[in-house]
Image 1 (cartoon, rainbow, N blue to C red):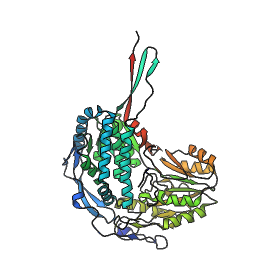
Image 2 (image 1 turned 90 degrees about the vertical axis):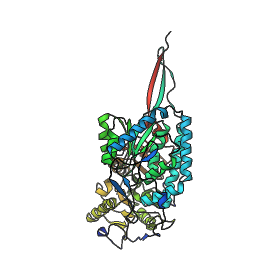
Image 3 (image 1 turned 180 degrees about the vertical axis):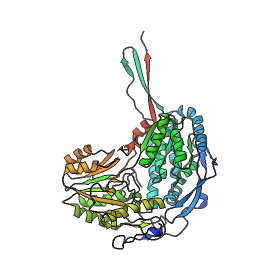
Image 4 (image 1 turned 45 degrees about the horizontal axis):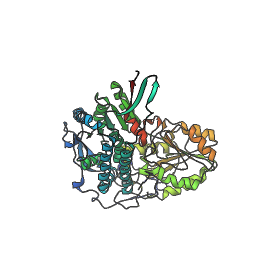
Length: 519
């Protein structure tokens, strides 16, 4: 459980594409008993959620929701249309006037009740998340705990927004600064943390007094729909609306809709570009949390054993399908061999399996067949380029979309695997010779979400993070999060901040009221 939302807790297919190398890919996938994770009656209504009720889609097309652990079909959900989005936006617009006039305390009380309801149903939400994503149950339980904490933090923080003091900044005129809801927010969430990323958006959006329409990933909509089912009696009708479907139809319509005041997306860089381009037609605000390629800079004076142990979780949490994952190690050449040996031993101890295979399972499958092929393609090309795998290096045998936890060594600077976001259980190891080179190499990627520095030098621990162009830089740790501190990136990783008081500022607007009191 992550009291501070840390993702470093220690407890923590396709036959034609199998490339088995028994000297490298030595792990086996542990299989649990089929069925039993979620009863059919525990699935949410497989419809859109608009104006407080579940409604049918205006179109007849559906999307199959696949269990990535065995490639079986769980259910089908509707592919929403632009007409469905328009209905949802109209509902949000009808709800907005009354909702934005509620007091921060009223909104806080309601959001606390939402957190209570999630906590009461944590078990079914975790099991449903694992069914839809293939995550180990411990990972899904951590996500649900983080979801509860996010709602609780935003419930309190929404009552404590501050602005500059009212005063006479021009002679005879008193200025007052107001923080207002931005209005109706369109939200697009990703497949890697379906429930948690929904919470990261829904909680501050509601706390700031906005209504919203959310499009969950077409691959993982089940816990977002379940959340709506669980809290539908708590929220005013129309404040929260959900339209399931594809990005080019539902996502684009949200981004370009003239009545949407801000669009927020967590997803890939390409998705971010598409949303920002569509949003430009109405000059609406955009909040983007995109990809990452986190460098881990390990200096010669670092505690190598501690680094290897910490990166075991920080690199492979959620099977590496994590935008802040410690996926690119830059280690000083004098200790590279020692660190790599320590790290590989840590990786060798992973238990891989489906969610029903035991409480000690730590690594699950890739989210889909397409993503399985994408990650496998990176490994294929690395092998063809002569980049060795110290462990792992390919898919694992049997059904489902499993890839062995992999460490690629002797990775040349500028190579594809060192620059591109693989988004799987793959870590690359490169070397550097001095501090200036380490900083330059760390900054050379297009992403700027997160990084970490490992050193025993106090001065270096303060100085080097200032020179790294990333929104979060950890020192002697990696992937530790808390609701009180912001999360977001620079460069290709987007703009805007999730979590913390900064998220509430992103989902509100500043108004200056000046009163002439000259007598």
